[in-house]
Amino acid sequence: MRGKRSFSHDRSSLTLVVSALLAAGLAACGVGLVLGLPWGPGWAEIFVLALLGILLELGAIFLLGRRKKRQLQNLVKAAKRLQEGDFNPDLDTQPQNDLGLVAKGLRFLLDRFQHNQLEQENLLDELRHQAYHDELTGLPNRKFFVERLLAHFQLASRLSSSNVTALLLVNVDHFKAVNDTLGFSVGDKVLQIVTQRVKNQIRQTDELFRLEADGFAVLASALSHGEDAALVAQKILTALEAPFQVGERLVHLTASIGISRLPQDGFNSAEVYKNAETALSEAQKERGTFRFFTMDMQYRAQERLQTITRLHAAVRAKAFEAFYQVQVDPRGKILGAEVLARWKTSDGYILPDHFITIAEETNLILPLGRQMLEAAASFLAKLREMGLTDLELWVNLSVRQLQSEGFDQTLDKIVRNWNVSPRVLKFEITEGALAEEARALKQIQTLRNQGFSFAVDDFGTGYSSLNRIKILPVDILKIDRSFVAGLADKKVDRDLVEAIVTLAHDMGLKVVAEGVENIAQKLILDELGCDVYQGNLFGEPLNESDFLKVLKAL
Image (tube, rainbow, N blue to C red):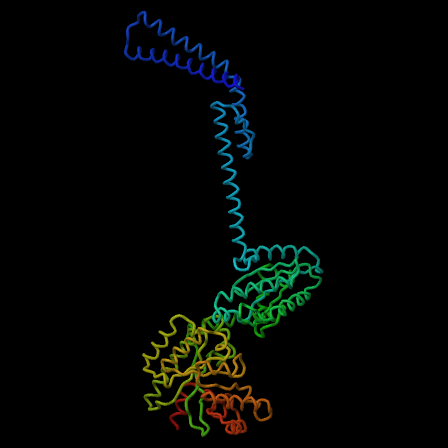
Protein backbone atom coordinates (compact mmCIF):
# COMPACT_ATOMS: atom_id res chain seq x y z
CA MET A 1 0.00 0.00 0.00
CA ARG A 2 2.79 2.39 0.95
CA GLY A 3 4.61 1.75 -2.37
CA LYS A 4 1.42 2.29 -4.33
CA ARG A 5 0.68 5.53 -2.50
CA SER A 6 4.34 6.68 -3.05
CA PHE A 7 4.12 5.89 -6.73
CA SER A 8 0.97 7.95 -7.07
CA HIS A 9 2.61 10.74 -5.09
CA ASP A 10 5.74 10.64 -7.29
CA ARG A 11 3.62 10.84 -10.44
CA SER A 12 1.84 13.85 -9.11
CA SER A 13 5.17 15.48 -8.14
CA LEU A 14 6.61 14.74 -11.58
CA THR A 15 3.61 16.32 -13.22
CA LEU A 16 4.00 19.43 -11.09
CA VAL A 17 7.74 19.78 -11.91
CA VAL A 18 7.20 19.35 -15.63
CA SER A 19 4.32 21.77 -15.62
CA ALA A 20 6.42 24.30 -13.73
CA LEU A 21 9.26 24.03 -16.29
CA LEU A 22 6.85 24.45 -19.16
CA ALA A 23 5.19 27.44 -17.51
CA ALA A 24 8.54 29.10 -16.80
CA GLY A 25 9.77 28.63 -20.36
CA LEU A 26 6.58 29.94 -21.93
CA ALA A 27 6.49 32.85 -19.52
CA ALA A 28 10.04 33.82 -20.41
CA CYS A 29 9.24 33.71 -24.12
CA GLY A 30 6.16 35.80 -23.56
CA VAL A 31 8.02 38.47 -21.62
CA GLY A 32 10.71 38.71 -24.28
CA LEU A 33 8.21 39.14 -27.05
CA VAL A 34 6.19 41.71 -25.17
CA LEU A 35 9.25 43.79 -24.27
CA GLY A 36 10.68 43.45 -27.79
CA LEU A 37 14.07 42.18 -26.61
CA PRO A 38 16.58 41.78 -29.43
CA TRP A 39 17.44 38.26 -30.56
CA GLY A 40 20.59 37.03 -28.93
CA PRO A 41 22.30 34.12 -27.23
CA GLY A 42 19.85 34.14 -24.32
CA TRP A 43 16.88 33.50 -26.61
CA ALA A 44 18.22 30.09 -27.61
CA GLU A 45 18.45 28.91 -24.02
CA ILE A 46 14.91 30.19 -23.29
CA PHE A 47 13.49 28.51 -26.39
CA VAL A 48 15.19 25.22 -25.55
CA LEU A 49 13.81 25.42 -22.00
CA ALA A 50 10.23 25.93 -23.31
CA LEU A 51 10.63 23.13 -25.86
CA LEU A 52 11.95 20.81 -23.16
CA GLY A 53 8.91 21.62 -20.97
CA ILE A 54 6.54 20.82 -23.81
CA LEU A 55 8.19 17.49 -24.55
CA LEU A 56 8.27 16.53 -20.90
CA GLU A 57 4.56 17.50 -20.45
CA LEU A 58 3.60 15.39 -23.44
CA GLY A 59 5.54 12.51 -22.00
CA ALA A 60 3.84 12.87 -18.61
CA ILE A 61 0.42 13.00 -20.24
CA PHE A 62 1.20 9.85 -22.19
CA LEU A 63 2.42 8.03 -19.10
CA LEU A 64 -0.47 9.11 -16.84
CA GLY A 65 -3.32 9.36 -19.34
CA ARG A 66 -4.28 5.69 -19.51
CA ARG A 67 -5.62 5.56 -15.92
CA LYS A 68 -7.40 8.94 -16.20
CA LYS A 69 -8.93 7.88 -19.49
CA ARG A 70 -10.71 4.98 -17.75
CA GLN A 71 -11.96 7.33 -14.99
CA LEU A 72 -13.19 9.81 -17.60
CA GLN A 73 -14.99 7.04 -19.46
CA ASN A 74 -16.74 5.99 -16.21
CA LEU A 75 -17.86 9.57 -15.58
CA VAL A 76 -19.17 9.85 -19.17
CA LYS A 77 -21.17 6.63 -18.72
CA ALA A 78 -22.61 7.94 -15.45
CA ALA A 79 -23.59 11.20 -17.15
CA LYS A 80 -25.41 9.30 -19.90
CA ARG A 81 -27.35 7.28 -17.31
CA LEU A 82 -28.31 10.52 -15.52
CA GLN A 83 -29.57 11.90 -18.81
CA GLU A 84 -31.74 8.79 -19.18
CA GLY A 85 -33.33 9.35 -15.73
CA ASP A 86 -31.20 6.93 -13.69
CA PHE A 87 -30.15 8.93 -10.63
CA ASN A 88 -28.25 6.07 -9.01
CA PRO A 89 -25.39 5.29 -11.44
CA ASP A 90 -22.22 3.39 -10.48
CA LEU A 91 -19.45 5.87 -9.66
CA ASP A 92 -15.88 4.96 -8.80
CA THR A 93 -15.03 7.32 -5.95
CA GLN A 94 -11.87 5.45 -4.86
CA PRO A 95 -9.12 7.17 -6.95
CA GLN A 96 -7.25 9.76 -4.84
CA ASN A 97 -6.91 12.31 -7.64
CA ASP A 98 -8.86 15.17 -9.19
CA LEU A 99 -11.25 12.85 -11.09
CA GLY A 100 -11.89 10.88 -7.91
CA LEU A 101 -12.84 14.12 -6.17
CA VAL A 102 -15.18 14.94 -9.05
CA ALA A 103 -16.83 11.52 -8.70
CA LYS A 104 -17.22 11.97 -4.94
CA GLY A 105 -18.78 15.40 -5.42
CA LEU A 106 -21.16 14.06 -8.04
CA ARG A 107 -22.13 11.17 -5.75
CA PHE A 108 -22.88 13.61 -2.92
CA LEU A 109 -25.04 15.78 -5.18
CA LEU A 110 -26.95 12.76 -6.44
CA ASP A 111 -27.60 11.54 -2.88
CA ARG A 112 -28.94 14.96 -1.91
CA PHE A 113 -31.05 15.09 -5.05
CA GLN A 114 -32.60 11.67 -4.32
CA HIS A 115 -33.34 12.72 -0.72
CA ASN A 116 -35.01 15.94 -1.87
CA GLN A 117 -36.93 14.09 -4.57
CA LEU A 118 -38.29 11.64 -1.96
CA GLU A 119 -39.35 14.51 0.32
CA GLN A 120 -41.07 16.22 -2.61
CA GLU A 121 -42.94 13.04 -3.53
CA ASN A 122 -44.09 12.62 0.08
CA LEU A 123 -45.27 16.25 0.14
CA LEU A 124 -47.14 15.82 -3.14
CA ASP A 125 -48.80 12.66 -1.79
CA GLU A 126 -49.89 14.59 1.32
CA LEU A 127 -51.23 17.52 -0.72
CA ARG A 128 -53.04 15.12 -3.04
CA HIS A 129 -54.63 13.41 -0.03
CA GLN A 130 -55.69 16.76 1.44
CA ALA A 131 -57.20 17.82 -1.88
CA TYR A 132 -59.36 14.70 -2.02
CA HIS A 133 -60.20 14.09 1.65
CA ASP A 134 -62.10 15.82 4.44
CA GLU A 135 -59.82 16.86 7.29
CA LEU A 136 -62.33 16.30 10.13
CA THR A 137 -63.61 12.83 9.23
CA GLY A 138 -60.84 11.57 6.96
CA LEU A 139 -63.47 10.67 4.37
CA PRO A 140 -63.12 11.33 0.64
CA ASN A 141 -64.55 14.78 -0.14
CA ARG A 142 -66.87 16.19 -2.80
CA LYS A 143 -64.11 16.45 -5.41
CA PHE A 144 -63.30 12.77 -5.02
CA PHE A 145 -67.03 11.95 -4.99
CA VAL A 146 -67.65 13.65 -8.34
CA GLU A 147 -64.90 11.58 -9.98
CA ARG A 148 -66.10 8.33 -8.42
CA LEU A 149 -69.75 8.99 -9.32
CA LEU A 150 -68.75 9.55 -12.94
CA ALA A 151 -66.72 6.32 -12.94
CA HIS A 152 -69.61 4.37 -11.40
CA PHE A 153 -72.07 5.81 -13.92
CA GLN A 154 -69.85 4.87 -16.86
CA LEU A 155 -69.41 1.37 -15.47
CA ALA A 156 -73.11 0.91 -14.67
CA SER A 157 -74.03 2.02 -18.19
CA ARG A 158 -71.99 -0.85 -19.61
CA LEU A 159 -73.28 -3.54 -17.26
CA SER A 160 -76.54 -5.47 -17.43
CA SER A 161 -79.62 -4.14 -15.66
CA SER A 162 -79.24 -6.79 -12.95
CA ASN A 163 -76.23 -4.93 -11.61
CA VAL A 164 -77.27 -1.67 -10.01
CA THR A 165 -75.37 1.04 -8.19
CA ALA A 166 -77.32 3.28 -5.82
CA LEU A 167 -76.45 6.79 -4.70
CA LEU A 168 -77.63 7.61 -1.18
CA LEU A 169 -77.45 11.23 -0.03
CA VAL A 170 -77.52 11.32 3.78
CA ASN A 171 -78.32 14.56 5.61
CA VAL A 172 -78.22 14.91 9.40
CA ASP A 173 -81.49 16.61 10.41
CA HIS A 174 -81.26 19.86 12.40
CA PHE A 175 -77.49 19.53 12.77
CA LYS A 176 -77.06 23.30 12.69
CA ALA A 177 -78.87 23.47 16.03
CA VAL A 178 -76.10 21.33 17.57
CA ASN A 179 -73.41 23.81 16.51
CA ASP A 180 -75.52 26.80 17.56
CA THR A 181 -76.48 25.50 21.00
CA LEU A 182 -73.62 23.17 22.01
CA GLY A 183 -70.70 24.61 20.06
CA PHE A 184 -68.58 23.51 17.11
CA SER A 185 -66.37 21.18 19.15
CA VAL A 186 -69.41 19.10 20.10
CA GLY A 187 -70.68 19.31 16.52
CA ASP A 188 -67.35 18.06 15.16
CA LYS A 189 -67.36 15.13 17.56
CA VAL A 190 -70.92 14.25 16.54
CA LEU A 191 -69.90 14.24 12.87
CA GLN A 192 -67.01 11.89 13.62
CA ILE A 193 -69.40 9.54 15.41
CA VAL A 194 -71.87 9.79 12.49
CA THR A 195 -69.04 8.83 10.13
CA GLN A 196 -68.12 5.76 12.15
CA ARG A 197 -71.74 4.63 12.53
CA VAL A 198 -72.42 4.90 8.81
CA LYS A 199 -69.19 3.03 8.04
CA ASN A 200 -70.35 0.23 10.31
CA GLN A 201 -73.61 -0.14 8.36
CA ILE A 202 -72.26 -0.34 4.81
CA ARG A 203 -70.26 -3.02 3.04
CA GLN A 204 -66.52 -2.80 2.50
CA THR A 205 -67.16 -2.44 -1.22
CA ASP A 206 -69.43 0.59 -0.66
CA GLU A 207 -67.90 4.06 -0.67
CA LEU A 208 -68.64 6.82 1.85
CA PHE A 209 -67.99 10.54 1.23
CA ARG A 210 -68.51 13.76 3.15
CA LEU A 211 -69.97 16.38 0.83
CA GLU A 212 -70.73 19.28 3.18
CA ALA A 213 -71.10 20.16 6.87
CA ASP A 214 -74.00 17.79 7.56
CA GLY A 215 -74.18 15.95 4.25
CA PHE A 216 -72.74 12.56 3.29
CA ALA A 217 -72.97 10.31 0.24
CA VAL A 218 -72.82 6.54 -0.13
CA LEU A 219 -72.15 4.76 -3.42
CA ALA A 220 -73.48 1.21 -3.00
CA SER A 221 -72.45 -0.86 -6.01
CA ALA A 222 -73.22 -4.36 -7.31
CA LEU A 223 -76.75 -4.45 -5.88
CA SER A 224 -79.03 -7.17 -7.20
CA HIS A 225 -81.90 -4.67 -7.39
CA GLY A 226 -82.08 -0.93 -6.95
CA GLU A 227 -84.61 -1.43 -4.15
CA ASP A 228 -81.89 -3.16 -2.11
CA ALA A 229 -80.66 0.34 -1.35
CA ALA A 230 -83.66 0.65 0.99
CA LEU A 231 -82.04 -1.91 3.28
CA VAL A 232 -78.83 0.11 3.38
CA ALA A 233 -80.76 3.32 4.02
CA GLN A 234 -82.80 1.86 6.85
CA LYS A 235 -79.71 0.48 8.57
CA ILE A 236 -78.10 3.93 8.43
CA LEU A 237 -81.24 5.65 9.77
CA THR A 238 -81.53 3.18 12.63
CA ALA A 239 -77.87 3.62 13.55
CA LEU A 240 -78.20 7.40 13.65
CA GLU A 241 -81.33 7.36 15.79
CA ALA A 242 -79.35 6.17 18.82
CA PRO A 243 -78.26 9.02 21.13
CA PHE A 244 -74.79 10.51 20.64
CA GLN A 245 -72.72 10.61 23.83
CA VAL A 246 -70.29 13.54 23.67
CA GLY A 247 -68.59 13.98 27.01
CA GLU A 248 -71.38 14.47 29.52
CA ARG A 249 -73.84 15.56 26.84
CA LEU A 250 -76.41 13.33 25.17
CA VAL A 251 -77.40 14.48 21.67
CA HIS A 252 -80.45 13.10 19.83
CA LEU A 253 -80.54 13.35 16.05
CA THR A 254 -82.18 11.81 13.02
CA ALA A 255 -81.25 11.75 9.34
CA SER A 256 -82.96 11.97 5.97
CA ILE A 257 -81.84 10.04 2.89
CA GLY A 258 -82.51 10.55 -0.81
CA ILE A 259 -81.78 7.69 -3.21
CA SER A 260 -81.25 7.55 -6.96
CA ARG A 261 -80.08 4.59 -9.02
CA LEU A 262 -77.45 4.33 -11.72
CA PRO A 263 -77.97 4.45 -14.61
CA GLN A 264 -81.79 4.47 -14.79
CA ASP A 265 -82.32 7.67 -12.77
CA GLY A 266 -80.36 9.97 -15.04
CA PHE A 267 -78.77 10.49 -18.43
CA ASN A 268 -75.45 11.35 -16.80
CA SER A 269 -73.83 11.42 -13.38
CA ALA A 270 -74.81 15.04 -12.74
CA GLU A 271 -78.49 14.25 -13.31
CA VAL A 272 -78.29 11.19 -11.06
CA TYR A 273 -76.94 13.42 -8.30
CA LYS A 274 -79.60 16.08 -8.91
CA ASN A 275 -82.35 13.47 -8.72
CA ALA A 276 -80.94 12.11 -5.46
CA GLU A 277 -81.10 15.67 -4.11
CA THR A 278 -84.73 15.86 -5.18
CA ALA A 279 -85.48 12.64 -3.31
CA LEU A 280 -83.62 13.99 -0.27
CA SER A 281 -85.78 17.12 -0.29
CA GLU A 282 -88.88 14.93 -0.21
CA ALA A 283 -87.48 12.89 2.69
CA GLN A 284 -86.64 16.07 4.63
CA LYS A 285 -90.29 17.06 4.63
CA GLU A 286 -90.90 14.23 7.08
CA ARG A 287 -87.39 13.81 8.61
CA GLY A 288 -85.97 10.54 9.80
CA THR A 289 -86.87 8.65 6.64
CA PHE A 290 -85.67 7.88 3.10
CA ARG A 291 -87.17 8.37 -0.34
CA PHE A 292 -86.37 6.95 -3.77
CA PHE A 293 -86.37 9.33 -6.71
CA THR A 294 -89.47 9.10 -8.91
CA MET A 295 -90.54 10.93 -12.04
CA ASP A 296 -93.37 12.48 -10.06
CA MET A 297 -90.74 14.12 -7.88
CA GLN A 298 -89.09 15.46 -10.98
CA TYR A 299 -92.33 17.05 -12.14
CA ARG A 300 -92.79 18.65 -8.72
CA ALA A 301 -89.18 19.83 -8.78
CA GLN A 302 -89.76 21.45 -12.19
CA GLU A 303 -92.88 23.14 -10.87
CA ARG A 304 -90.91 24.35 -7.88
CA LEU A 305 -88.23 25.80 -10.16
CA GLN A 306 -90.90 27.62 -12.13
CA THR A 307 -92.37 28.96 -8.89
CA ILE A 308 -88.95 30.20 -7.80
CA THR A 309 -88.52 32.04 -11.11
CA ARG A 310 -91.94 33.65 -10.81
CA LEU A 311 -91.34 34.45 -7.16
CA HIS A 312 -88.15 36.32 -7.99
CA ALA A 313 -90.02 38.40 -10.53
CA ALA A 314 -92.87 39.04 -8.07
CA VAL A 315 -90.51 40.27 -5.36
CA ARG A 316 -88.84 42.64 -7.80
CA ALA A 317 -92.24 43.91 -8.94
CA LYS A 318 -93.51 44.16 -5.34
CA ALA A 319 -96.48 42.02 -6.31
CA PHE A 320 -97.31 41.12 -2.71
CA GLU A 321 -100.15 42.72 -0.84
CA ALA A 322 -100.83 42.82 2.89
CA PHE A 323 -104.19 41.41 4.04
CA TYR A 324 -105.52 41.78 7.59
CA GLN A 325 -107.55 39.32 9.66
CA VAL A 326 -109.08 40.67 12.84
CA GLN A 327 -108.40 39.41 16.33
CA VAL A 328 -111.10 39.92 18.95
CA ASP A 329 -111.56 39.44 22.68
CA PRO A 330 -114.29 37.13 24.11
CA ARG A 331 -116.85 39.97 23.86
CA GLY A 332 -116.10 40.52 20.16
CA LYS A 333 -114.11 43.75 20.53
CA ILE A 334 -111.48 44.17 17.80
CA LEU A 335 -108.02 44.23 19.38
CA GLY A 336 -105.99 44.21 16.21
CA ALA A 337 -105.16 41.98 13.24
CA GLU A 338 -102.63 39.57 11.86
CA VAL A 339 -100.83 40.75 8.72
CA LEU A 340 -101.01 38.08 5.99
CA ALA A 341 -99.09 38.13 2.69
CA ARG A 342 -100.95 37.56 -0.56
CA TRP A 343 -99.25 37.12 -3.94
CA LYS A 344 -101.20 39.10 -6.50
CA THR A 345 -101.28 37.58 -10.00
CA SER A 346 -103.40 37.99 -13.11
CA ASP A 347 -105.34 34.89 -12.04
CA GLY A 348 -106.02 36.18 -8.54
CA TYR A 349 -104.32 35.95 -5.17
CA ILE A 350 -102.01 33.09 -4.18
CA LEU A 351 -102.08 32.09 -0.49
CA PRO A 352 -98.86 31.84 1.59
CA ASP A 353 -99.06 28.04 1.80
CA HIS A 354 -98.00 27.95 -1.86
CA PHE A 355 -94.92 30.18 -1.66
CA ILE A 356 -93.70 30.92 1.89
CA THR A 357 -91.66 27.71 2.21
CA ILE A 358 -89.94 28.33 -1.13
CA ALA A 359 -89.33 31.95 -0.16
CA GLU A 360 -87.67 30.72 3.04
CA GLU A 361 -85.45 28.26 1.20
CA THR A 362 -84.34 30.78 -1.42
CA ASN A 363 -83.89 33.75 0.97
CA LEU A 364 -86.58 35.65 -0.93
CA ILE A 365 -88.28 35.84 2.45
CA LEU A 366 -85.92 38.73 3.27
CA PRO A 367 -87.21 41.23 0.68
CA LEU A 368 -90.74 39.83 0.99
CA GLY A 369 -90.68 40.17 4.77
CA ARG A 370 -89.34 43.71 4.46
CA GLN A 371 -92.27 44.61 2.20
CA MET A 372 -94.74 43.24 4.76
CA LEU A 373 -93.07 45.23 7.55
CA GLU A 374 -93.31 48.39 5.46
CA ALA A 375 -96.98 47.71 4.72
CA ALA A 376 -97.80 47.13 8.39
CA ALA A 377 -95.93 50.24 9.55
CA SER A 378 -97.55 52.48 6.95
CA PHE A 379 -100.99 51.08 7.87
CA LEU A 380 -100.37 51.76 11.56
CA ALA A 381 -99.54 55.35 10.65
CA LYS A 382 -102.94 55.65 8.89
CA LEU A 383 -104.70 54.14 11.90
CA ARG A 384 -102.98 56.70 14.13
CA GLU A 385 -104.28 59.52 11.93
CA MET A 386 -107.77 58.03 12.34
CA GLY A 387 -107.37 58.09 16.11
CA LEU A 388 -107.12 54.27 16.34
CA THR A 389 -103.92 54.25 18.37
CA ASP A 390 -104.53 51.02 20.29
CA LEU A 391 -105.06 48.58 17.44
CA GLU A 392 -102.22 46.04 17.24
CA LEU A 393 -100.78 44.51 14.09
CA TRP A 394 -99.02 41.13 14.27
CA VAL A 395 -96.40 40.53 11.57
CA ASN A 396 -94.92 37.09 10.88
CA LEU A 397 -91.13 37.00 11.08
CA SER A 398 -88.93 34.33 9.57
CA VAL A 399 -85.92 32.89 11.32
CA ARG A 400 -83.91 33.92 8.28
CA GLN A 401 -85.00 37.52 8.84
CA LEU A 402 -83.98 37.40 12.47
CA GLN A 403 -80.60 35.89 11.57
CA SER A 404 -79.89 38.15 8.61
CA GLU A 405 -77.25 40.85 8.78
CA GLY A 406 -78.71 44.30 9.19
CA PHE A 407 -82.19 43.23 10.32
CA ASP A 408 -81.92 45.50 13.37
CA GLN A 409 -81.12 48.49 11.18
CA THR A 410 -83.89 47.65 8.70
CA LEU A 411 -86.52 47.39 11.42
CA ASP A 412 -85.28 50.53 13.16
CA LYS A 413 -85.41 52.50 9.90
CA ILE A 414 -89.00 51.38 9.17
CA VAL A 415 -90.16 52.16 12.71
CA ARG A 416 -88.56 55.63 12.60
CA ASN A 417 -89.82 56.46 9.11
CA TRP A 418 -93.44 55.74 10.08
CA ASN A 419 -93.12 56.78 13.72
CA VAL A 420 -94.46 53.42 14.89
CA SER A 421 -94.51 52.32 18.51
CA PRO A 422 -93.43 48.79 19.57
CA ARG A 423 -96.59 48.82 21.66
CA VAL A 424 -98.73 48.24 18.55
CA LEU A 425 -96.27 46.55 16.13
CA LYS A 426 -95.89 42.96 17.27
CA PHE A 427 -94.37 39.81 15.84
CA GLU A 428 -95.14 36.12 15.39
CA ILE A 429 -92.55 33.36 15.07
CA THR A 430 -93.11 29.66 14.42
CA GLU A 431 -92.66 27.13 17.18
CA GLY A 432 -90.18 25.08 15.16
CA ALA A 433 -87.91 28.10 14.72
CA LEU A 434 -87.86 28.74 18.46
CA ALA A 435 -86.89 25.12 19.08
CA GLU A 436 -83.91 25.17 16.72
CA GLU A 437 -82.29 28.53 16.32
CA ALA A 438 -80.19 29.91 19.18
CA ARG A 439 -79.26 33.06 17.26
CA ALA A 440 -82.92 33.78 16.55
CA LEU A 441 -83.71 33.50 20.26
CA LYS A 442 -81.00 36.03 21.06
CA GLN A 443 -82.42 38.45 18.47
CA ILE A 444 -85.94 37.98 19.85
CA GLN A 445 -84.72 38.82 23.35
CA THR A 446 -82.99 41.94 22.02
CA LEU A 447 -86.21 43.11 20.35
CA ARG A 448 -88.26 42.37 23.47
CA ASN A 449 -85.87 44.56 25.42
CA GLN A 450 -86.77 47.34 22.96
CA GLY A 451 -90.47 46.87 23.75
CA PHE A 452 -91.63 44.52 20.98
CA SER A 453 -93.85 41.54 21.83
CA PHE A 454 -93.70 38.03 20.37
CA ALA A 455 -96.23 35.24 19.90
CA VAL A 456 -95.53 31.56 19.17
CA ASP A 457 -97.50 30.73 16.03
CA ASP A 458 -99.11 27.31 15.35
CA PHE A 459 -98.32 26.11 18.86
CA GLY A 460 -98.68 22.36 19.33
CA THR A 461 -97.41 21.35 15.90
CA GLY A 462 -93.68 21.82 16.43
CA TYR A 463 -90.95 20.70 18.77
CA SER A 464 -91.42 22.77 21.92
CA SER A 465 -92.77 21.52 25.21
CA LEU A 466 -94.60 23.70 27.69
CA ASN A 467 -91.57 23.41 29.97
CA ARG A 468 -89.42 24.94 27.22
CA ILE A 469 -91.97 27.70 26.63
CA LYS A 470 -91.33 28.88 30.18
CA ILE A 471 -87.80 29.95 29.27
CA LEU A 472 -88.58 31.36 25.81
CA PRO A 473 -88.85 35.14 25.29
CA VAL A 474 -92.52 35.13 24.22
CA ASP A 475 -95.76 36.67 25.49
CA ILE A 476 -98.52 34.79 23.65
CA LEU A 477 -99.26 31.25 22.46
CA LYS A 478 -101.37 30.83 19.32
CA ILE A 479 -103.13 27.45 19.33
CA ASP A 480 -102.94 25.84 15.90
CA ARG A 481 -106.17 25.76 13.91
CA SER A 482 -106.00 21.95 13.58
CA PHE A 483 -106.74 21.59 17.30
CA VAL A 484 -109.50 24.20 17.24
CA ALA A 485 -111.20 22.41 14.32
CA GLY A 486 -111.70 19.25 16.40
CA LEU A 487 -112.91 20.92 19.61
CA ALA A 488 -116.58 20.04 19.21
CA ASP A 489 -116.20 16.33 18.39
CA LYS A 490 -112.73 15.22 19.53
CA LYS A 491 -112.17 14.89 23.24
CA VAL A 492 -108.43 14.62 22.78
CA ASP A 493 -108.31 18.02 21.03
CA ARG A 494 -110.46 19.60 23.75
CA ASP A 495 -108.25 18.14 26.48
CA LEU A 496 -105.11 19.36 24.71
CA VAL A 497 -106.45 22.91 24.25
CA GLU A 498 -107.57 22.99 27.88
CA ALA A 499 -104.10 21.93 29.03
CA ILE A 500 -102.43 24.59 26.87
CA VAL A 501 -104.70 27.36 28.13
CA THR A 502 -104.30 26.37 31.80
CA LEU A 503 -100.53 26.03 31.76
CA ALA A 504 -100.04 29.13 29.60
CA HIS A 505 -102.02 31.21 32.10
CA ASP A 506 -99.97 29.71 34.93
CA MET A 507 -96.86 30.99 33.16
CA GLY A 508 -98.35 34.45 32.64
CA LEU A 509 -98.93 34.01 28.90
CA LYS A 510 -102.03 34.88 26.90
CA VAL A 511 -103.63 32.41 24.48
CA VAL A 512 -104.92 33.15 20.97
CA ALA A 513 -107.10 30.55 19.21
CA GLU A 514 -106.62 30.46 15.43
CA GLY A 515 -109.10 29.16 12.88
CA VAL A 516 -112.32 29.76 14.83
CA GLU A 517 -114.98 29.04 12.21
CA ASN A 518 -118.26 28.56 14.11
CA ILE A 519 -120.08 29.52 17.27
CA ALA A 520 -119.73 26.03 18.80
CA GLN A 521 -115.96 26.38 18.80
CA LYS A 522 -116.24 29.88 20.23
CA LEU A 523 -118.40 28.72 23.14
CA ILE A 524 -116.01 25.91 24.05
CA LEU A 525 -113.05 28.30 23.91
CA ASP A 526 -114.97 30.72 26.17
CA GLU A 527 -115.48 27.90 28.63
CA LEU A 528 -111.79 26.97 28.53
CA GLY A 529 -110.73 30.57 29.18
CA CYS A 530 -109.19 31.57 25.83
CA ASP A 531 -108.10 35.24 25.70
CA VAL A 532 -108.19 36.16 21.99
CA TYR A 533 -109.93 34.74 18.92
CA GLN A 534 -109.04 34.78 15.23
CA GLY A 535 -110.90 33.13 12.37
CA ASN A 536 -113.51 33.52 9.67
CA LEU A 537 -116.27 33.60 12.30
CA PHE A 538 -115.12 37.15 13.08
CA GLY A 539 -113.93 38.14 9.63
CA GLU A 540 -112.02 36.83 6.63
CA PRO A 541 -108.66 38.36 5.70
CA LEU A 542 -109.23 41.72 3.97
CA ASN A 543 -107.03 44.02 1.96
CA GLU A 544 -106.17 47.40 3.42
CA SER A 545 -109.01 49.41 1.91
CA ASP A 546 -111.69 46.88 2.88
CA PHE A 547 -110.31 46.54 6.40
CA LEU A 548 -110.35 50.33 6.79
CA LYS A 549 -114.04 50.31 5.87
CA VAL A 550 -114.71 47.78 8.62
CA LEU A 551 -112.84 49.89 11.15
CA LYS A 552 -114.61 53.10 10.11
CA ALA A 553 -117.97 51.38 10.56
CA LEU A 554 -117.24 50.61 14.24
